[in-house]
Image: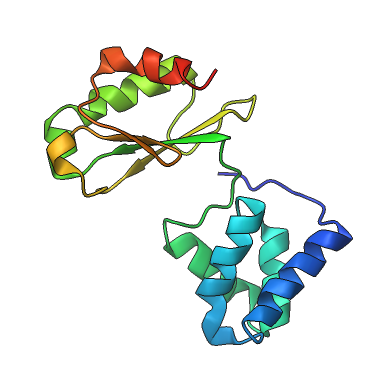
Length: 160
């Protein structure tokens, strides 16, 4: 997966600095700082990681290690409507893989990708804790339960 090269504006660097300062530039607060930065930017490109590393006085490699270790963090921008398909045991057994395949087909993207228009991104999750509704799909904060491949088109249509 190639990383996207971005140019940070002065106000972006100021925002990162403000976030780091709010955690007293404490290296032990790295995960909290990264959460806040991702909340603000939507993802954590290398340029953001470098500023965080500098402000917290830790190596860029350490920041990168944390970003790549935790699945919550992403180095690529998510779509306006991030779609996540649960692949936990209950969802998987009830056909989540077929639902995921249908989303891939309809959007013409793979898991981890974003549509060229930036509207949708696709990911899979381990478990969302709604096993009684399996298979479960999340679009942003909205939960769809008992999703069948035939439902995919209608779900996508809601976001046109």
